[in-house]
Length: 422
Ligand SMILES: *Cc1c(COP(=O)(O)O)cnc(C)c1O
Image (cartoon, rainbow, N blue to C red):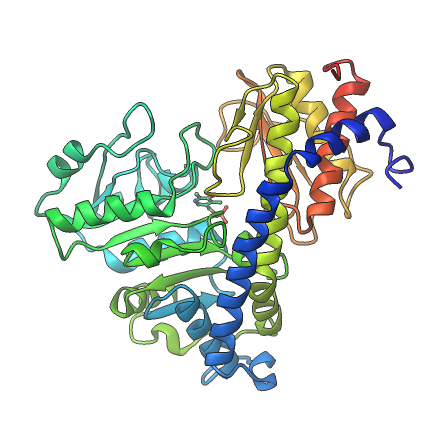
């Protein structure tokens, strides 16, 4: 089958050899997934998820049993008091924006203790001037840079906390930066430090790409709010849209008044037929994350062995599902992305090309052949066309598909003489 999909026997053999060496690593990932599968199942059973929950609502969506039960399932899975899990939340950025706007008031200050946040949040906060930003509403922002090695700068954090600081934000995943992603334990330490400085100061974690990578989540180590996207890990590839916010009841409720309207909060919001996909996706999510993690580790080891810098490297522990590979040349980035695209279930015949995307200072190439548009829990890759010519690779609804995608990327590089197999 690999041959018929265009993988040469040399590329296949090279891949198999690497997989042989990853057996123990993969077993550990299986164990985390098994634990998380039971965690989700247990929350579903505790909340008596029934066939009626898979139904739908329209209009205002009052008394949507499926929606309300699902939110309790999320809250219990993440050991939190309350949750919002809604198709009205359009993406991760929107979920984060709702959490911020709902919990900050004019005159308040937001403090990021993990350096620069994800690109799209720059406009939400107003770091880059933007219509409707927190800055326009008189909410100020302060940021504490991380130490050179990517660790928290506790001294500067203490200095930055002032009377106006009303929310602390921490991004778990590196996103498209080169710092290491934080472990849940590291996040727990940072939160404990913030609470030592000011016990009542709420801490929010942007958990995008982190869900189910570990057996604990930021809400297990003191996060008051945790936010993510349903077209990443917790949607399990089945959620067609959505975001979630979990945490302390009061803070989640504050967010709900921004999601819908003051006075309405979480009482309204029809589910329009998505309940089943939300439940089933969440049920499958630990298994899907397992496949994506194996794919990321396989890619790291394949490309590391061929001499390319990879972040994280082939052996270090994982905190999210993103893998960066520095290919070092524009041709390398293009060939890699073409390989990922060619392995897709949808649009496999399309050849991606670099283009001038709004908001970026260089051309960007993206590969995605996804069932859900832009879904990055599905196998996808993208790379800015500028030095050091790195691609960011993530997802794969199954390990088997991720494996094919990586072999296919390597095949393209081999075919174009951009790499030589040992
Ligand atoms: C993807 C991501 C976001 C934004 O999510 P979208 O769904 O793309 O809006 C925010 N933060 C991090 C760390 C992310 O990875």
